[in-house]
Length: 175
Image (cartoon, rainbow, N blue to C red):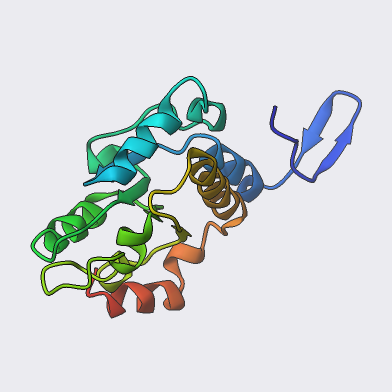
């Protein structure tokens, strides 16, 4: 059960700000788009299973269409040839959108320090939460999801229109 936001309450009424209600709704209805390329994808599948049950957090509906997702979960090794596709998927997602980098390979290239492997997806798109490990345990994935929920719950409705956010996107050549 989700805790009620701060507000005024009395006999038969409850009042709070629209921003807090929208934040709670966003945080508890994240639709992840799994972009899994290697062993981290198997750990994500375990997280989706009944033992760890990611649906407790409102993320039981993985979306395989970027236009219907708001959380991009990049898992595993990303080759440099795949980088434009990851960026295109990110750009096709509707705002607000969050990115979770799962595993050592997605976060920093992992053990693959070669010419063909991207040394972290934060070189092409902004990342909100990093989950370390090779591969990370399902408990870590759930913790990362809860951190994304905290970001979604506490984000201002006007943050995405701020000059700082626009400058961040411009630094990645994203319009």
